[in-house]
Image 1 (cartoon, rainbow, N blue to C red):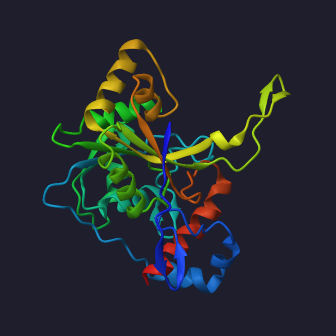
Image 2: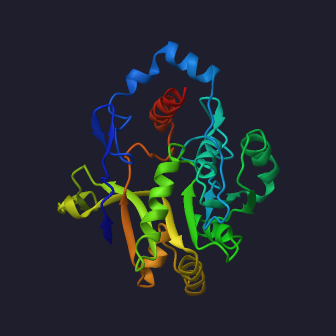
Image 3: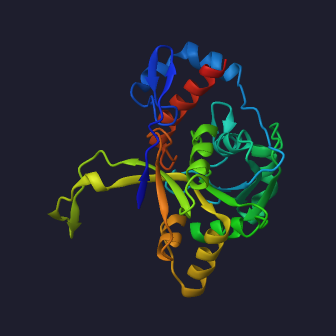
Length: 290
């Protein structure tokens, strides 16, 4: 995959900072966990302002059909309260605040659609139209269900894990722009360079240490041209191929997918230990909006 340099520097407070990937809120999470700070933030939650352009070109598909098995919470973790809001609400708000997103499709268990709407959507002032799609047994099936509800009038589809509540409108817009700005690109994936030493293992034995400079950890959102991602999913379904993410399906067809550098703190809440850094990151976002 090719990489897109997102190190566009903006002046802020006399310092040069990356508007997308820095600074990381994970550097010193203890700073954000004073009782006083949390009391202030949870008593005055500030939402992002929803907006929709007159002619939006992107639809968002947010995957929220996971069982939450690894988190140890039956029925999924997307409704877990983080600083006064469900995880899913935090994720959806970021897309609602991007004017180029004209539709949000949230993929959830079919039998729980009313519950998800009531707890994570209806109680909040979303502006972007939101519809629900039934999730499948596999992530790929859920993604396929979501993109199939996107009208062909949308040029791009952004796919996001509902359990990544720290996604920002800036990151969403930046990833859409990466695809729009490169006529040869079929999609773009958010990620960051691997920072840990990697080992190749067989039967608990280390058999190699690859050069980590060529490895990146990928996240979401992943943004694709609508036609290619729909064709990639249909082809994978017809041929019985299951990929680890949506990008793998496009790559399999020979599509060109860019890699957009994103922040490390755009974490996915998977296990209970992920909750504390997610709360730290969201607390900082709220503090900046007060």
